[in-house]
Length: 167
Image (cartoon, rainbow, N blue to C red; front, side, top):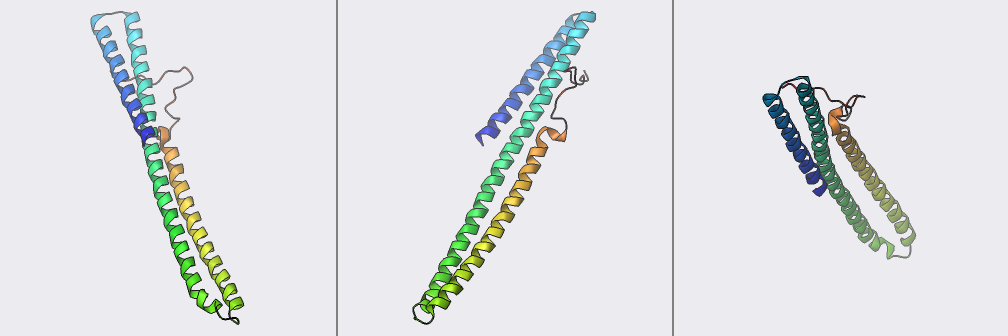
């Protein structure tokens, strides 16, 4: 979660920087006139918007990283539970078949039945684990798609300019 917090802090820092640039442009435009001043102010507003777009990407990344961490943590818990249940069932089967294996005539049949039962438990646990992994993978893929708001990732046009902000 440290990474998510660092990304979020970077987003906040970028928003602060954009606000500083906008204030400087506002002050420049308020105290000066002329085409050069207007061009400088416009360029400053465009720069501030580009920084805001980057901030949004950092914020989206922060949310996605946090959610992905939670998804992985939850998946690990699900996998641990599947593993624990499978081991408990295998131990139960071993105890159940131990009595049958103690007789000389039943040892071979008990071993075959035990092997078959354990194989079924392992197959079921494997299927559950695969389903859990598939669900988690799909959810993580959704998080990856959410970065950048599903647009071009906040990138600017070929000129490098972001759309001008309303002032």
